[in-house]
Image (tube, rainbow, N blue to C red; front, top):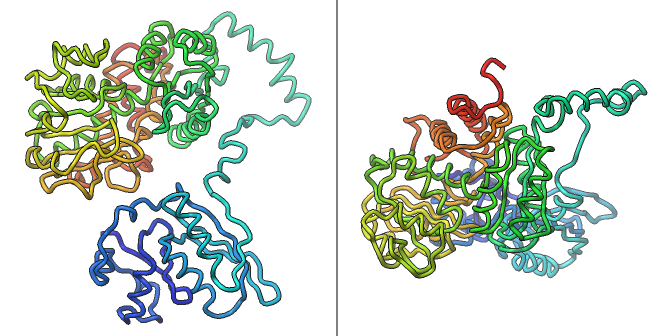
Length: 533
């Protein structure tokens, strides 16, 4: 159980960053003498369940939604007198704001200026908190800053030089005339570009902005902040230099041709947030024409991490992949890629559902070529009906579809020790607090629940390995090897229902993934480098 650590400031309880606790509940606890006002920091380390049970306050779904996503800093000026800060923090607590930090800005002529950093549920709650604080006598709100927008000012990435440029000698080597000899060397041997340019360690993150997060078709400019974030993840976790390429076209031919024209600059192409089924065709055509790896992360990254998590989940419930019945909700790019990888890994009974229900051979409604492939290669028992009907007796549910699609009654009809991966973002098909008791393992795509299925476990290490061996492509063998590598980070004796996938901050992950890619690239003959290089 998570420990809640708190500090008393003027009668109000202030959780430390990352802690979830309702403030007015804590204040009432103090007032009722359950915890003396003079309690030390260590005295106030209590289990979350103890707080809740003592106060008879039921857990609310909103408690799990407070996060830095809606974090803001409010600068206040107020009389420097005893109890005033307590009034302010109590007001924030009653408005269900979570205070992460309190900093003094200045003290002048009997008044004090402080910055309070607060996590809210949404923009509306942020406004509510601000309005309530304004009502506290003597308090002046100087400004309110959205921390997420502040972080994005001017963008999140930049280009920096790797070598100093201080003297004429430096200039003559990095630019003309010295650079001419390097150009001539590459002109004679194109592969030398991998050694002598940024191509050795650079990936293009390409999007057209048609399927960005849960926002849909918001266009290339609005997609740029996401692609910048992706580039940061590449660098932080894989030491890969990635650059956003946001294309102002949704024409498949134009996207393919543009990437082909840009390819000589890069060692790999990461396709991102391109709507289905176009993304499948774009990737297929680029893989056919390019001799560098092309990887659509929304398809294959998701599939790889799902397989890794499922492998460890099956160990928890002591079942085998080839023996369980798996129901997948969502027949888009991710659902199709997950199905193909599960079948390649040894899955036998996989049923995919879309809005029209189970996909089966001979179905005519709401079909396309990709779904036709699913109809021929999955659902061996040719099950028909709705998602709810298909779940009867299923061992595993994997959702890559829409929020709230699954009910508690749906999970109740699954098999004992069921596994549920509800991966719709930002809100899952069903919340962990709503599942039935027969569900043994639960995973989501969110960071505020256990078992986060996150693609960052895959793509940084994957491209690290691809670039290290100058791989020509990403093949199925690599995907299977990477899933095994991610799963193996958790030791057999550590696997638990709430720990079936490593943390995104586990630095072992990218290393073992890169090693798996390198080994598989040599085994399958797609590495340009020799093993002795």
